[in-house]
Structure formats: structure tokens, C-alpha cells
Length: 278
Image (cartoon, rainbow, N blue to C red; front, side):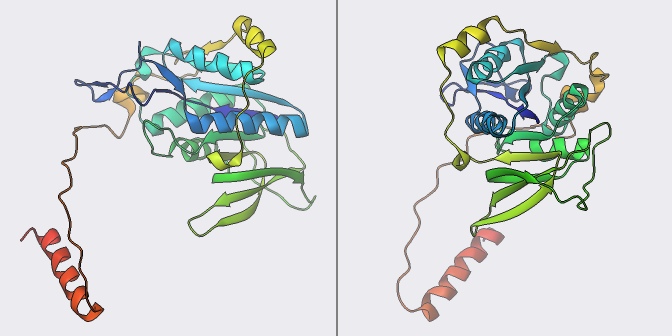
């Protein structure tokens, strides 16, 4: 089984800095960590490998310093790591990011499960996982708290990504919802995003750290992925941050007491004032 995990290096929440000219995060020279949700994605990839065999490949996009995050993933037991790094990628939105990661995944050749963290703590959009699925034409299941690989009935047929080998397996997942969770079966290959409830990430071993220190990380550029500069970065992103500001502090509210027949009209009147500004 070939498992691909997409991770992101994010600024430590206490050291977030914004470029006032581009309204994008400053990443160079800032203390960074692997996105916490992505740590759970790495752990789940390793557990699936331990139960079903195969290998785990980690992919990331960003400046050269992201290599630190990839080596941390390797020290946990990941087999291979790829980094897409090109100055033209600066300012890429989630649509462009998912396109670039999808291109790398296509170049890896064979894949069964693509795992992402639910969302990143710096962007909080939860859009990259679904974007990868859309670019690759794969089914997707988001906010998953449990994954089990089972045998797939022979007559069950799923849509296959072009160039992917057929498989007789499917993934049974538990997907979290506001009311509880759903149990779904999905054919492979599939894109899955995981929540923190799925597992507890392991600590790197000494042997893993030594191996990661000398491991080779394959680096990709736009040229390697057949992408042009105007397709990525700020130029290629359909969404951009125009303005950033700190919201004003909320004013103290009021507590209404009494019968519903008295309080409901008062609440409705207050809402009307907020909407109309009168």
C-alpha cells in the first residue's frame, strides 16, 4: 500500500509575522513547527503501513527551511520525503497549493491513500485536502477519526485516477459530524483528512533521528512539475488577502430575564438594530 501524507510547516502560534506589503505570512527566519493536525496525518499513515504493509511518502511545499519538517517526519518512520520549493510559489492560495501538491502526487506514480490534516493552524481553511481530490479526480472523505482497510467486494467498482493500478481494497472510515459520526466505505485511491481524535503522534526514535539526518530529500521546482510562474503564487491565485486588521473588542452585552413572551420581542428588536444599524 502506497500512502502519501501532505504536510505544512507553519509558524509557531507565538511568532506569527505578516508582510505588510503582500499581506502574506513571513516564513523565512521564523520559528516553525509541523502543523499539529498534520502530525496526526503522519502518525495515521505510519499505522496504516504497519498494519497493511507498503510505504509512506511525505510531501510539502514551501521555502527550503521546510526541509526541517520533512526530516522530522522521516525521523518518525516515514520512508521518503519530497519538497516543492520555488520563489514563484510565494503567496499561493489554497487552490494553487492543492494544484502543486496534486502534480507532485501524480509524479510519484502509484498511490492508494492520500492523507492530510484537517486544516492548518495559520490558514484554518480546510480547503487543501478537498482541492487535491478535485485536481486528481478522486473521492474524498474529510474530518476522519478512524480508518480501517478492508477487502473490497469484487463487483464493487470505483472511479480510478488515470495511471493508478487497480486494487481490491477499500477504506472504511468514521467521519465526524456535528451530531456524531458517519461510517462510510470508499474505494481506493482516496483523499482523507484527519482530526486530532484519530491518534496520538509518536515521538521520533534515536535510530529514526540518525536516519533522517542523512536521508536524501528530493526537491522539485515549477519546471519539474511543468508549471508556469503565472499559474502559481499571487499571480495565479484567484483569492488574495486585501486587508488585515484586528477586530475591535466586543462591548458588554445584556442579560434579559422574564417570560419568553417578553424577552423574545426584545431580542428581535436588538437583532433588527444590529442589521439595520439604527
